[in-house]
Image (tube, rainbow, N blue to C red):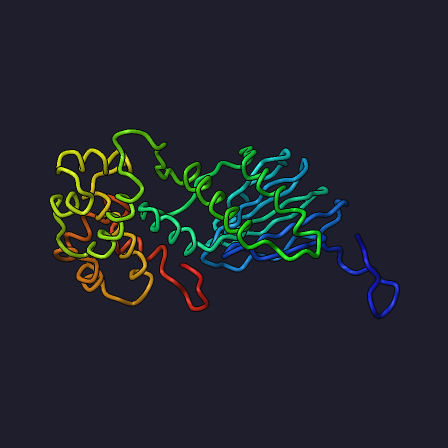
Length: 299
C-alpha cells in the first residue's frame, strides 16, 4: 500500500489501513496491511492502559520489543490474542500481511469494573503469547460492521460488549472469581447491599455481625455465603480493597505513613505487612516500580 508524495513521484512510507471508534471507555481499532514492506513502527507511548489484540487472520511473522528488549519473534494463528500492558514501552516490526482488532482499555476502567462487583484486587493481566481465544475473536467480529460502516454505534450494544469483554478478560487472565449462581451464595440484593456497606465503611472497623444484619442472615451463614460469593472472607475482601486504594495513593507524593492512615491501617508497619502479603512487594518497592512520571507514565 504505497502512496505518491505531494512533491513528486517518490513513494511515501507505507502505512496500514486503520478504522477506529470509541465504545464506552474502550477504544477499538482495526489495523490491516496486505504486503510485507512495513518499516519498524515507532515505540509506543506509555499510558495507564492495556491493549488486547485479536488476530482476524493468520499472521505469519513479526518481531516485538518491550522496553527495548526483544520478547517475541514469530507469527500467530487466527484467533490468537495478545494483552500488552501499555505502562511498558512497546515496539513492533510487522514482517508479513496482517489483519487485527485492538481493544485499548484504560486500567482505571478495569479497576472500576472490578470494584463495582466486589473484586478490588487487580494488578495486571497474564496471557502467554499465541494464546487462542475464540471469545475475544467473536466479540471482535461482532463489532467489525460498525467499524467499516458509517452507521452510528448502538451505545447499549457496546456497553454490553464492554461488560462481556471485561468479565472474560479478568476471569481468564487476571484470576478473578465469578461463581455460578447456586445455593449457599448471597442473593443479588444481598450482594449489592453488603458491597455498598463495605465500600462505605472499608476504612473503619466493621464486624461480621453488622454485615450479617445488612443481609438479614445469621453470622455463620453469612460468613459461608460471602466466601462462596466472592472467593474470600470478608476480612480478606476489606484488606484487598484497602490495598487497592493504597496503590492509588502510592502513585502520588503522599507519604507511606499518611497512606496507611488514609486507608484504615493501624500504622505503617501494619500497611507494610498486609500490602506485601497481597501485592507481593512492600509498599516502598511497589511505589518505586509503579510511580507516575510527568505525563502519566509509570517508572
